[in-house]
Image (cartoon, rainbow, N blue to C red):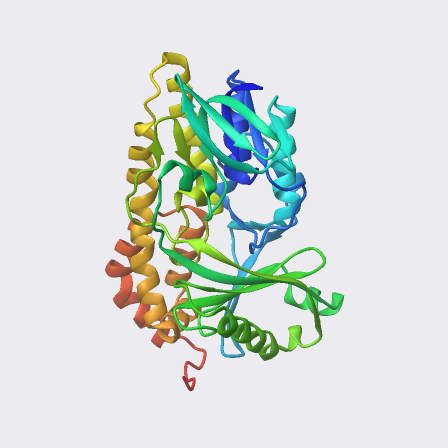
Amino acid sequence: MVYDVIVVGAGPSGSMLAYRLAKLGFDVGIIEKDLLPRYKPCGGGLTLKAIQRFPFDIKPGIDLEAQGGMVLYRGKTLLKTKVEQPFAWLVNRDHFDHFLALKSANAGVTLLEGVAFKGFERQKGKIIVQTKQGDFITRILVGADGINSQVAQAAGLFAKRETGFAIEAEVAISSDCLAALGPYAAFDFSAYPGGYAWIFPKKDHVSIGIFQAKVGKAEAIRKALDQFICRYPLLASHTILHIQGHHIPLGGKKALLNREGVLLVGDAANLADPWLGEGLYYSIRSSEIAATAICNGLKTGIMDLSPYTRQVNFEIVSQLAQARLLANLVYRFPYQCSLLISKSIQMQKIVFGVIRGDYTFRQLNYLLILKLPSIIKQALWSKENLSYED
């Protein structure tokens, strides 16, 4: 088979890139090593700014809308607040990824499941994509195959990555406990040094995990996850349905993302923020930028994909560098930052605003510098008791 573009990986970045290119009239194939739906370790938080990038209604792929947030600290709830404006939705990645892949197939993309990528070679302006099921010919090859991208390795891109590590579990709790937890996304920056724990409710279970912005020992993080779960009464009676550890790409450093007809998007391009490890928005946005660059190359016959690298580094990577500054602050002073967000309405608006997309990370850091004195004053004058043994 001959394609204009072959995308390796049927995650959000791969499916959305393929969808956009198919809508523009190009012949696109997605190579996916697994059969869909397949389990994907991920908390499944989809922010408003990500939702707004989709060119179609994604409600059928969403599990639950988060109506508020919680700040936890060492077994205590410091804050439980309902937000006025929507900020995030929660998805099960197996269902959500399958939904997006089917959308791309309905747009005309050839979805090749159970086809494992092996490598590629260039021949006379074409790229021969080698798989365990045979060879395919394409003009442009896209790596959307995650942090362990085989396309990146074959192309000589990202020889060294900066990564974090997370352990994520799908956990069943009683219907009463699930109702008591409510549609609130919970965060605890005391659960593990240099990281945080999360609880994301779904329709019939919860996703619970720990993220560390370094690569630590999996055994230690797993132990911390068990301790975190045991701290909270609503999680006391639980059953772990699935648990898996995985690396998370930490963006914020400029890198080459294309080479001679090959291009990387999403996690394969190391696009996740070093604060919360969130990567879905950057996957979707990078696929948009890639679609424009690839379309221009295919239409003009000039296969220069360097504008993609330049725009991603300028627009996305620069913001991830700002997120790294925030991460360094929060992970160095987890208790103090947890108190500030739980006691200061100004701080809550800023943090929820950056998650929602009202502010960039650069704007957030500027606002923190500008408003920090008033934020601290507001927290100190809070009517609630601020005393807590750290």
